[in-house]
Image (cartoon, rainbow, N blue to C red; front, side, top):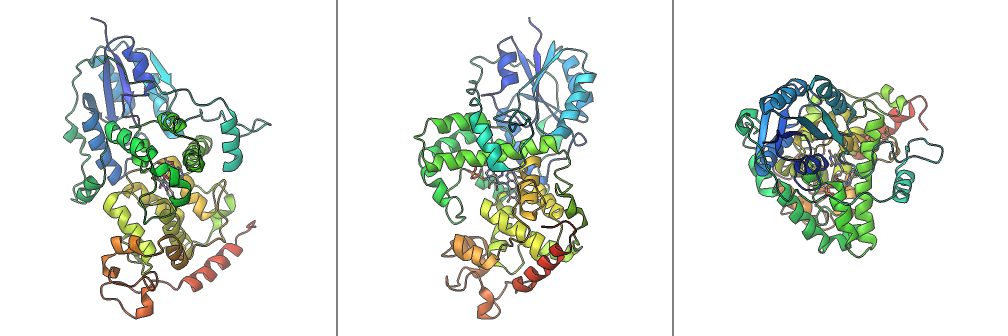
Length: 449
Ligand code: FAD
């Protein structure tokens, strides 16, 4: 019998449009292998660990290992008598160095396939050959390139060869806290869940996406982000499925958002320290405050600003937060509380089911004003007007902050107008004063515009 090819899985937990798997399955039997490598790259956060457990269970037939990838993948290849190892390349430069170490340790040949972007990192360039720092120019240039290749079907016949590995529970991915229970009722991890979600979204909601996407009180976005983060669906599948829908502003705006994901990945490929270091150097000298108690209030959704608290509680309960509210809570942490964006990035990394080193870091830097194509620091979100504009009748707040559920729409975003609301904290800081303080801190930065 032909020796199998080992497929090294990472954040590509699907069968369809999986270039490495498609090539290997066409040649004979395969072994699907996943190694939980806590030292090769940033360890998964708590919510991601829960999702990963579910996703591996859904995929099924995966040989599991725990330890350094450069030791475990060659060991598994040997154990199952693999004649080659195939994988899809990561866009994350840290994970690329792990790939290099695995490649160096293997005693059988390997083949590396295109990864999880629409356009290969580095391939979207300006006329002078440089990489873009501004999204609009990046996306215009990307759209002028030949379109992404059509997605590959799942292998028609897949012969998965046996290979000894660990039980899923031995990876210890399930959080000890029962906190995951509310996440479980919000999601259906796995490739089938992703495909159903995409179909349902393109069947209707996408048409109103450009008008509704900023409304956290409406179910107007695709919620595909965790499925994309774990590669249960590829951006190419989404791209081509969207081409089949009559092109309108909704579809165009949706694809543009996928473009932001792409832009973030290209940025990370170019700037490996994006999750830690501000791209605009002057921000390294920003006079941040060290205030663990304030950070905790923000994390727990106890700031006294309803839209901020609703967002933080949605995040804790479901592992996801609406994009508009992510921007509001991030602005509040960075600008009202003057807590470094890296602290927020870390909390999101731990609690988001879609936590992704490229999109998370690029978005935090965008809000902080320290990123490539960022909102200027002096544009500070007002949590009251943001709430009134994007949650006009307060239903998002009522849903996530039950202490305020009985309040009228007139005061739902400024409950302090009623005096003290039982069980709900007063604002932890006066927004107008915080804004003045933030602008003064920003002005003191050398080189700030
Ligand atoms: P849709 O509106 O349906 O968009 C479709 C897809 O496009 C998303 O699934 C996502 O892959 C991509 N996308 C949409 N908006 C953005 C964006 N602004 N930047 C990058 N990609 C985008 N997204 C993550 O996937 N992981 C993160 O860790 C993450 N952290 C964020 C942190 C902050 C502070 C902010 C402001 C945004 C962050 N985002 C992150 C981006 C965005 O909020 C989510 O991608 C989006 O809310 C996911 O919901 P959806 O799938 O319904 O998106």
